Image 1: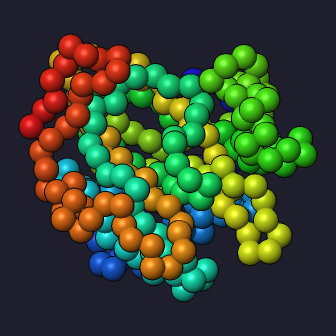
Image 2: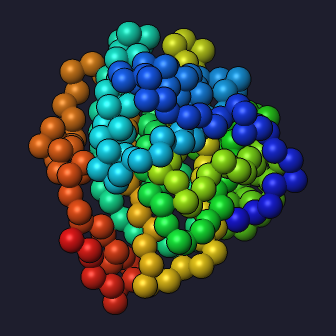
Length: 255
């Protein structure tokens, strides 16, 4: 991970706590929506939610499903559009990554549920949409010219980095990241995304760093979910953790 020269956002601006006194999640969902689903640069484009003590893996995943449903109601009321799942999976993520966006449509966000783990890591985001705006480029053009996966893109984005200092590998937490690549729109606004990175400090095949990963998109009203209600329930209830990957062929999935 690149060490930021400055920090655009302070933890007080993007670190949230879920309250047991908010059963329908209306308060935390409204705040998360306004922080993440931004159409300008007055909000960070991400937030981290600390869950109460006593949460289990399954209750964390059900929290994620409930949070998405409440955010969908907010999004529908404000824009007339729907929020739908494009994917939902659990995996053991112990690979250090460069700044990147995950594959997805022009307007989408990630909701990642981190489970407690002995594997420690640092997380950070870079506001590449703001950088593109400052350079008078679209986000897509910026990535084409200065992709931080290659070359000097990390240096270009260094002033736009924020460390997620409230992330802890010892707690159940949920991180929302605006994963969009939409160009700015003056008509109704378009989600402005950020890039994300993780630096994993002590990876080990003997340990687990479980991430419950969902990708959620803004779509026209009435668009069907790519992840059915049955598949969402399986995501919430399963013990399966995918470990085998393109760089970890020797591992078997947990079940």
